[in-house]
Each structure stands twice: as C-alpha cells, then as structure tokens.
Length: 224
Image (cartoon, rainbow, N blue to C red; front, side):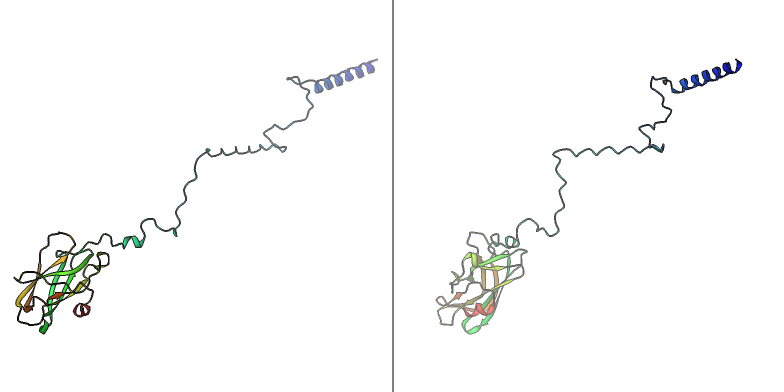
C-alpha cells in the first residue's frame, strides 16, 4: 500500500512540473521554451547595422553651376580690323607736325618740303601744302592731283610726308625771298600757326611756281 502511494505522489509531482513548464507566459502567449532573436539582432546575436537613410533629392528647378569657359574660346569684343579703322584719324594741322625745306635744284629753285608727325596719334596729310613766299602776296599754285580724304596719306607718330616746291626759272618777272611759310589743308576753318623755313635766294616766278601734293617719299615729291 505504501508503494502505490509513493508512486502516486511521484506521478502527481511530474504532472505538476509538466503543466508549469508548458503553461502560458505572463503576457498570455504560450512559452515554447525557444529563444527568438529580436528584430535588431542577427541569428548569431550580433546587432545588425541599420541601413543609411536615402539622400534627399536636390531642390527642383535649381540650375546647374555654370562651367568654366574653355581656354580656346575666342575673346569677345571688337575684332582687329575694327581697332585698325581710320574713321577717327583727323587731318594733320601745323600743331601736329614739324616742317623743314631743303634746296633740291638751284636753277629752278626747287625745294623738298618735309613734315614729320610729332604728335602721339596718327593724322592724315591732306591734299597739297599751303605755301606762301615771304612777304609776297598769294600762295604756291597746286601741281598734280591729290587723293580724296579717305585715301589721303596716313602718318603715324614719327612718320614723314614730302612735297616738291618749284619757284620757277629766273625769267626776270619774279622776286627772290628768304623764307616760306606752310600751313596744312584740313578741309576746315581750323586756325593754325604757320610753320616757317629758311629758303635763301629762292626765286619765285609768278607764272611758274607750284607745289605737289603730299607723298610718302622724297623721290616722287621731286619728280611729279
């Protein structure tokens, strides 16, 4: 009888232990006895690294930064031909030039006239020199055709122009003077200070004196 009771007590204890092990957990869910890894851990128990949040898209309508200009791109602005234009080159006046006269042929009282641009800018030697003879009335007559203003001789700083002055042969009708005065043709009423040069023994024939237009070399000036 004692053996049967003892077996009954042992069976009751085992049943009670089994019921407590399979019973519901405190939160009402059945405890299966296995350990489930949390959402933030890997199967091995090491916490996983959260994925980086996606980058926010750039603001709509934002223009891209301008790219640097290419080194080979041509510079803007006027072309070389525009900077060389002569529309702003004014006629030379006596304030722009120096003047000299040299005897070329005594028997015909031929003189070589020379002007040199002394200013810091270009100017144009227009037409013929305006030459007067000492205290004589009038001026030298023009010999040869001068180019128009657009084709007139352009003198840069330091450049020279030449003209040939002819007093004429000694025919007994003229007079001798010791100097001449020169002003420039400016095709305007610009006031100028006459430039003078010494011309000892220059004989001036009233019918044979003449002066050529400005040219760029002495040889042409004396042969026109």
